[in-house]
Length: 188
Image (cartoon, rainbow, N blue to C red; front, side, top):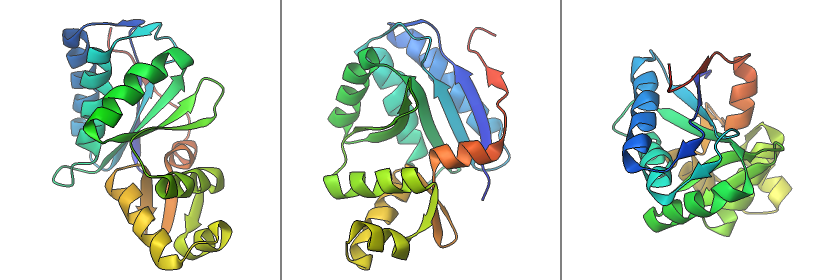
């Protein structure tokens, strides 16, 4: 399964709820306009300030949308996460019991928000491998296969990994498979 990929570069200052709503509406439109599963990539590398209200409006609400099984399947990957982004984003995600897949400014994987340690370990391993099956993952992590399958099902339900038949794909791997980006900016 190869999702459509949308790219959004965000404003430099994300400091009011109305600004957050505007950005979120742009991404929601991109998702709604796609004719298949979407991987929405939000680039925060130029964001100098993000407050809690924008983190809630943009990050938490898009993560909620992605994990809503009643809508078309979408996945959200946050890129360019710097140290000053983590506090507000992690806080609102934890408050809502959500988790988001991200990459730091230097490309390191980040899992922000609320997720148990077992699911976090499975997510990191899928991220590292790019694409894997449950059985090889259970062997690598030295965990029972049923436990790994349950954790993978939770990660899929939370839109943190993509299920492709019997294999599980990291959002980063899906992005790399998709090819070069065509950026969109909320200013346009």
